[in-house]
Amino acid sequence: MIGAELLRVEGLTKHYGARIGCADVSFDLREGEVLAIVGESGSGKSTLLNCLSAQLEPSAGTITYLRGDGAALDVYGMSEPARRMLQRTDWAFVYQDARDGLRMSVSAGGNIGERMMAVGNRHYGAIRAEASGWLERVEIGTDRIDDRPSAFSGGMRQRLQIARALATKPRLVFMDEPTGGLDVSVQARLLDMIRALVGQYNLAVILVTHDLAVARLLSHRMMVMTKGHVVEQGLTDQVLDDPQHAYTQQLVSSILQT
Image (cartoon, rainbow, N blue to C red):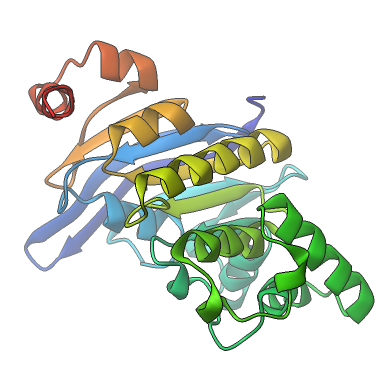
């Protein structure tokens, strides 16, 4: 269910010397809304995602996060410890390579438990029970709770990373190509799971993907990027069914012809 405004982005820009990473990006995001950022490799979508998630400081622009209690936070005006706390509580990040979002030397249950402990949970029994519950939600057998992610398949690792990310019940989740590199059948299972969890927990999601089919399945709105610029944005079905910009038309056409 689409709710109140959650994130306000104004004029977000990132330069790498003379090269543009992203330029003058502005949009609002609401509770329960999924926004897809699409484009070819090198379009600037990953730079934009890293700036939005406060992992990369922009050259210009502002991000305002509206907390559940109504407080408006200037994300890049916050102290570094306050930003890190925001990333561990209200926000979460899902990486394309699950190894970037997991501690491979720690058990599956320990990965989820660490995230919970970062927000103050200390009771071992309660943490283990909650970790077990999250394994069930992402379709991993609870008998694997003490196994390390290195023993898991790629799809299982990605599902574990999602469980770890959602364990603190964030309001906003950033996803960077979450189905990238997975077999088609594994992708389909993962997408169904993501869509179910987004609906169940009314998550707001900013999703980066090059796959327009993934964007159509998961997102309400879409932004199309090329050369660091957003060239088209709107409701996902409208953008894909009636693209207005020549670059978007080219993207859609290339998918239809494959």
